[in-house]
Length: 165
Image (cartoon, rainbow, N blue to C red; front, side, top):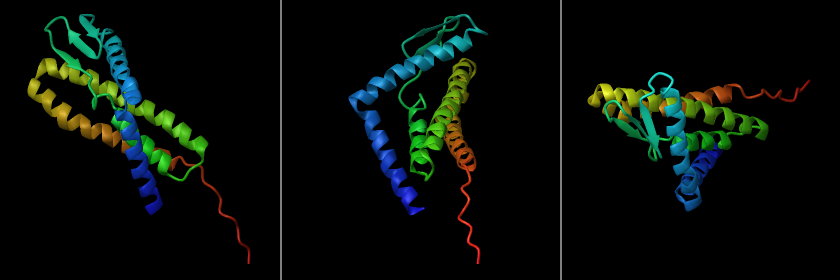
C-alpha cells in the first residue's frame, strides 16, 4: 500500500509538471479546441444555431457561450486516473488497456459536462455556476474513482502457487 501511494504521488507530480511544460501545453490547448468542436458537432444535431471558434461554443440565438479552458478539459482528471493505474501493480498490457478505456470514459463524461453546462448557462446562470464549480467537478472525479475501481476489479486473477503438504 505504501509503495502504491509513493508511486502514485510521484507519477501524479511528474505528469502534472509535464502538463505545465511548453510541450504539454502544446497538447492541452488544441485538445480543448477539439473538445469544443466535437461537443458542438453533437449539439448541432439538436440545435443548428451554434458556432465554435477555438475553444468556445456559442449560441447564435442568445449569444451565450462557454469556453473550454484548462481545468475544464478533463486533462487533470485523466492525469489522476493515469497515475493511479500506473502505480497499481498490474501487468503492463492490463495497464495500457485501462488507460485507453479509462481516458475515453472520463472524456465522454466531460463531453456530457460541456453540453449540459452549455444549455444550463442559457437557462439559469446561478444553476450553471453551481454545476460548473461544484457538481461537475465532483462528478468527474467520481468518474475517475469508479473507472479505476472497475479497472482494479477487472484485474486478471493470478493463482497463488499451490502448496501441498
